[in-house]
Length: 103
Image (cartoon, rainbow, N blue to C red; front, side):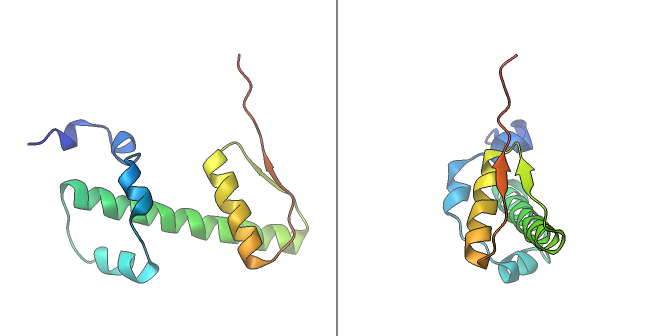
C-alpha cells in the first residue's frame, strides 16, 4: 500500500497532474469498459467527471440561449469553463460568478 487509498477521493482528484492529462469522449468510453484500481481508477473518475461537467455546461448554454436567460455559478472553475465554452460556441450569454462573502 502506498497510502493512495487512505486519502479521500476529492483530495486525490485535486492532484495537479490530472490537469495535464488529455481526455477524450472516446478515451473515456474505452476506459469505462475496464476495471481499474488506485491511480488508474482516479484518472477514469476524473475524466468522467470532466465529461459530465462539460455536458452539463453545454446543456446550460443551450437552455440559456433558447430561453434568453443569464447564468451564474459560485464555482470559479465552472465559471471559467463556461466562459471558454461560450466563446468557443460563439454565443452571447450573460455569465456571472457569485462571490461568496466572508461571514
